[in-house]
Image 1 (spheres, rainbow over the protein chains, first blue to last red):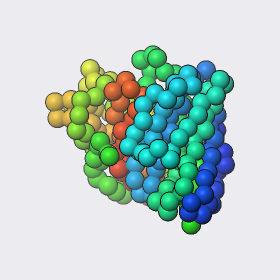
Image 2: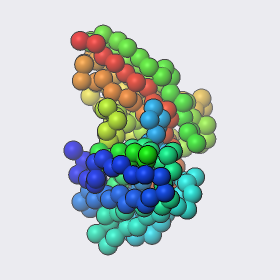
Image 3: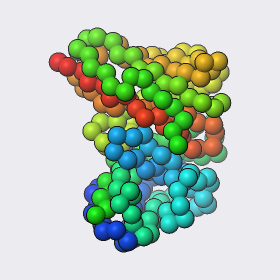
Length: 114
Length: 110
């Protein structure tokens, strides 16, 4: 167990809807990264939040947005859902600003868009 | 886009045998990490090797890194059925952004 939790575990939405996924980071960690993992693929970096500010973004459109709260938990929001957004969404927490780059992953939220 | 390519894509061995997985990457890195994923669940960190290191051990795991060839290997010795999982390499450059490969699916038969 990494101490990183995600909710919900599974979610079914229809095309065009909006979704919010949540992540609680490991105690003491101030950085949360989000990844999208399509079936049979490796995770792809969406963005990272460090001390409530976006700190890097991957090749994802603006309809993917996020927040980090003062307790360092985080949300991933996806608007105007598309069928290709169906994937496992993983968050990972880490202690940013140090040489420690190990990221600790949560169990993921599996999103199905119909 | 994926940074790394893992080889082989799939590997099936008997319990007790050794399993070797390889990872190649394209750009310079600060570190390379290996993760395990069971049945599409969260990733578990296995080992991190920095760009100035050549070999690292952790229990039954041995990781090598050759920065001149931009490649790494993960060796699991004396494999067990519980080692059945997908294994991913990921490269980091102190940006916090990890770039993952496609993964190797390992099946260990009892």
